[in-house]
Image (cartoon, rainbow, N blue to C red; front, side, top):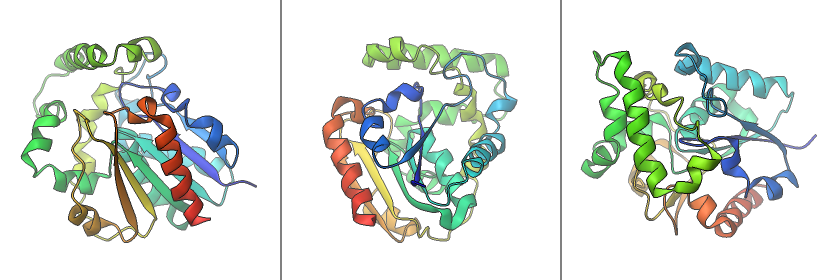
Length: 244
């Protein structure tokens, strides 16, 4: 049985975001290309987006595959969720790759950087305890206008990509995680040099939480794997090849 490669997109995307990576990954791995609730249909409930429910569902799907070796690849918030999945799967996870994303602990530490606070304004506003639920859809409209203006092709490929935006209200549970132990999972962080939404962490930040981690800054923005797929595919192949 091949190793299972699990992919999880971020916002405002769906499973199509990996279309330039799937062909070469399929040659070596069995694939599980996951979709966030609502990202492909636009229909989603608040319960679907509860952090624990999401993570449990992903773990269930991985365990149901009966693979004993797993690689995790996440983009944006998909990275946050898969990092939590990795902590539950233990030694079954052989490697993880985070594109334009990181885990909750690293992000919480990273929010001490003023520039990241500015880039994450929408995440922080949705953490306001008494923010009325009826205002959440307004964030969806605001973010859609901003992001789809910058990347018009996304509006055609993933028109429902921001439907699960209420998940940002669930991030508090992850951001308050005080676990400080270092992850032993080999991890690759990839960021775009022109990313408008996330600032690459410093090496010292990564070393605080990871025993075996590397990071590359690549040409492009938040969706650099679509802008420069050949470079990204080579980085992923080299990283996973070194672990073989």
